[in-house]
Structure formats: C-alpha cells, structure tokens
Length: 146
Image 1 (cartoon, rainbow, N blue to C red):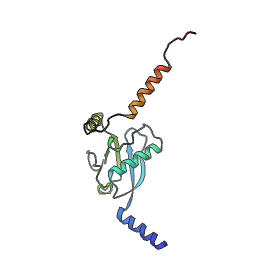
Image 2 (cartoon, rainbow, N blue to C red):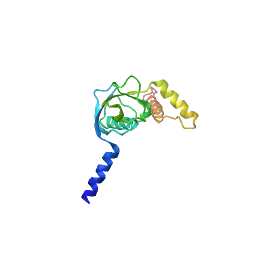
Image 3 (cartoon, rainbow, N blue to C red):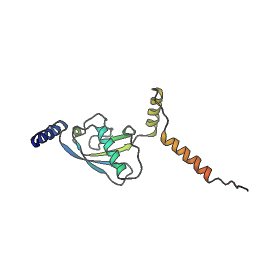
Image 4 (cartoon, rainbow, N blue to C red):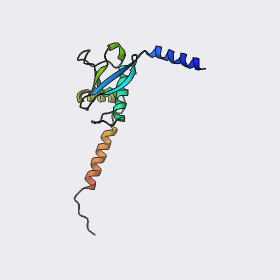
C-alpha cells in the first residue's frame, strides 16, 4: 500500500512538472507575495492563487478577486502582459508584477457582457449606494418635535 502511494505521487509530479517559487509584486502594495507553483500551471491559476494569498494576508490596498480584472507582467520578458493561457514555467522567470486593468478596459468588458445577455449589475456598487443612503438618512439634520 505504501509503495502505491509513492508511485502515485511520482506520477502526479511528472504530470504537473517541477515546483518553482514564484514572487508576485502588487502595484501599490508593500512587498511581494511568494508561493510555490508547478511549472505547468497556467498564468490564470497563478493570478488567482496570488489574489487569494493577498486577501488572506489582509494586505492593502484591497483588490478584487476576479483574475480577469488584472494584468500579469514579467519584467524579464517584456512590456506586454502575459496571456492567461500560458504555462508559468515556459517563461523561465520567477518574479512577476500584478496590476489592475485600466478602467476603460473594465468598462469595455462590462458592455460586452451586457451585450451577451449577462447581467452587468455590480453587487459592490449596490452596497455603496445603500451605505451612502443609510449614512445620509442617519445623519440628516432634521429636528424632530414631540
């Protein structure tokens, strides 16, 4: 039984490839996040993992969790953002930079989603409006009489 577990682990390692230590710096954050990934992991999975680690550590500024709202750069490769479908180990680099997409690209994405029949309703926007309404209602300068 012990031999079969070891063989299974070896097979999984061979399929996924070698493990590498990745360092992801966030624009505007204090320092990079480091974690271990497989060489065969896609850039989209690495971005997702980096965002989860960032949120788990409670870092500032607060970022979203949708990996489509971010651009992933490798300073050693060039100024272009990496494709989310590339294998992270194919680049030969270990240090990366994660930035939020410009607002124009986010708006363009929302318009495309609305055209495709998806809802473009933002939960976070609704929370902001309800909080704002509550704030104004709570602190209004109305004087009540008995």
